[in-house]
Length: 441
Image 1 (cartoon, rainbow, N blue to C red):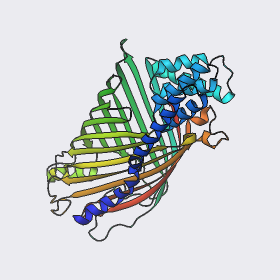
Image 2: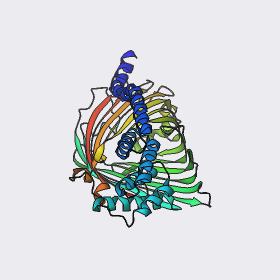
Image 3: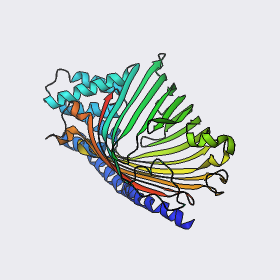
Image 4: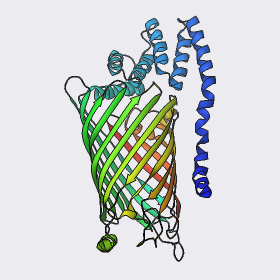
């Protein structure tokens, strides 16, 4: 048991650098206080205010940055580039009406072609955000390499030796859509819907054909600091061209912004599961059941923004599954942590890891020779991406290239189950193009 937990915790130690912003927080606060004192000592110093605004914006203090730029515009209202900066700050703060006022003032201003393109794009974003309906989405195309392509999808036995690893290369296509329609004049209630279609198809080696389809729709309620959504969810998973799992149920999600930097999230899901597994179905009468049943999940997350471009999210969850054949039922906790680090020109780094501990309900006399299954499952992923505009000379283009991202990633996964099941450990690499479109682009 000690060895099992040490192997799980070892990858988690890689997340220790995520604590670095905490150590730097005190020094940043002291520097910010000193800068503020300097600005207050010379409130009419335009360049000092602008330098302070850029510094505060980079640290995530958008309100302080907006106040500084506002002082500059009072003194010099014809600084059109700074007014565009001010409008973007208001947009990021959620003051869409204020952002629209500033962007409207720039309609006849003398801006560079790039500034004009950015102003037009943000005006479209403001209109989408304030509209009573909106649609957004993401289209992804790429390649995926796996060093143990079959092991990631199928549980193997280790009675006479574990099967050898076989690598594989797959193509990847995915489309996700999100939409909402506001109800009434309060702009608090809305109907929402979302859909996902995902396909991973074999190109070479032992790669496995895998598809996932998901749809959700329901009622949402939103205030300035919180949001709540409750809806119906349905999904289907297919392996090698055949249905493997159908799920139908309910999902609820609640988010509460505790401060400008910290958000608490709560998500619950309850679904009925219908498996299509011919080998198990053939003996279900003999063993008294199959894998069909219900699955319940509850997750709590805390997301904290250490700076404008640095967000760390930690999660704690619990999952339970029932099955008509009791040894297929399980329950157990899970933990996760992730880092979202943004850089200039839209470049980003995403790092995350998770661990699950599953204890099955009963010993399995038919499939596992009387053993009771216990799983420890870990996953880790590191991705680096940039919009195509980042490769332009100025790092911005004001056109479609800002919406298309090139992303590369490596991932690791493991599953320890104990005799007579074979353990799994594998890594993979991904390269994809992502096009984000619509209201939340």
